[in-house]
Length: 395
Image (cartoon, rainbow, N blue to C red; front, side):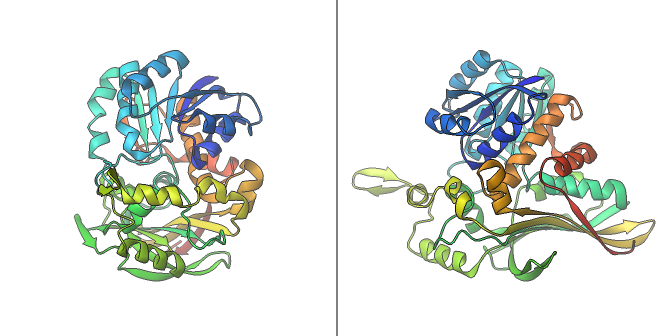
């Protein structure tokens, strides 16, 4: 039985904390900390057993170090903003405590996915004898585990990967984002990029689209080529990979609102002068938009996230699809959150569980692709995100 410190008090944190609280045999003590302690207290009030809460500025390494020494956790679960990854990693390094996150570091002034900043901690974490697990969400996270599960069990080589993230749910509002608006809009408005034959090919934002028919009669959606951080780690850790792409679905309504907001400058991340103060338009827009955590009661429908895999086995071509379907209303009934938060929050708990139980161990900085996929897949099936497989060609 272990002690964990969870940083952040948004929708994902609510799910992860709730799921951890349901496993007292693994997570003996839980402390939830955020800049705003009242948010932590609100989550704590929902849970099936008592947890501790605390206030901390995750940007402040000294504050983080002091809290870690006070709580004495075996693992820090970082569910704060991606801007804060490095300061939390610094605090873990200073205190000798293992680290886990769900999204790679992004500099506040540049919308950019890149693992270089966190991979640079490899030697220091290894010398300290501690482990950092990067990207234990769904995408990144589960999609990488799905890929390595396919490679382990069905392929000698994987040549082509398409990660396809569809949300067929609806919250009924004119415009809202399903996770942190600032991170969501930065991600969507960035240039697309995919990996092919050892090169990175860049596209204009949302300029490449296709129609995807989801399984289980969920219907067809337009999916758009984007860049996502797991492409970088997959290109590094999947031998023989020739092409890797990431696709996400968006409604016409969402894209039209986003276009208008962009046209009037509301999605900008450069500071502007307003009434004698410096403000960042996107952060102001975030304050106006609905809190994603508030969407749970009104969101209906399902998500469908998976990986289309093409490669060879015994010299013969194969094609395989592995995916998960998650129902928004079922998630809300269980943990008072919609499926977007659920599909990230559950894998964060599973990654933590595997680290604390010793099934995933190591010294240094690790991406999900570097670890045995089987225990993670087993836990997905057990804790609310069961995988499904379609054997398409060559089996």
